[in-house]
Length: 321
Ligand code: COA
Image (tube, rainbow, N blue to C red; front, top):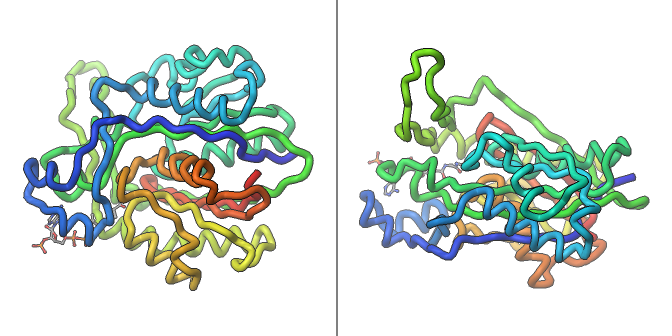
């Protein structure tokens, strides 16, 4: 059996911060942010939590797939910014959606999280262990961002996206994933837990720190490489690919990947203008948008590709159902 992506759903916080709003918080301006990143607005939580957004996206995906919550036998939530550690976000989602037959766990693969979660679900489905998996990427990055650091706060946004992956007899899903912990210092965020027996509270003084140029160079090199690698592994030609669904980090990264692959930019849909980088949520939010507006059609081959902290990166080629 092979897992195919069926229903999708999202939750996007209503509150919007535009570039002019940020220029009142740090020394920056709309022109610089648009030119260097492509981001125009980002949605950020007010009273919402990661669990709430994940559950809302999940409910929408379950309805879109036309399944009963009881049919779900596994829930994986990819997140780096949950409001809960115990029980895990996936268990909280299970409670909210009534997926009483599901096993649940969370996964941290940063901005590659949704891709790693899809691959994990796929492996379970191919092994025969599970048949119907709810996969969610949900992030409240506004809680991890240093709102005094103009090098990072302009990039990120909050939101959640979900998809149902179900077992089918005939389908294609081929994946490649990589990690490089040696280069992990390019994008870091320390734990906010107490430091052991000293019981010293770190509080909320730990935020995401990033070497932007190092991450940029990593992404524009590794993403085209891993896409070429997965296409070769799948025996699929670039001409057969309808769309490349990339993690939405920066317009210039997406443009550079398209150029290096010698593929038209029209095959690389983007919505980072509106949402910024929502980490593990970016790919499912984009998938949902493309499904709902009719861009994605049954039978099309697509590539999903993610990259981010770890460092981690990967790609999957699949047939859209
Ligand atoms: N507004 C105005 N100026 C800014 C700024 C901002 N928000 N942020 C940085 N600058 C300034 C810098 O201080 C620097 O000034 P200087 O030349 O006087 O020293 C100048 O702009 C250029 O900085 P630089 O860091 O070289 O810019 P950049 O072109 O590399 O763009 C990023 C910065 C962060 C947008 C870019 O590196 C990037 O997108 N990297 C990838 C990050 C990413 O995607 N991370 C998540 C991966 S999942």
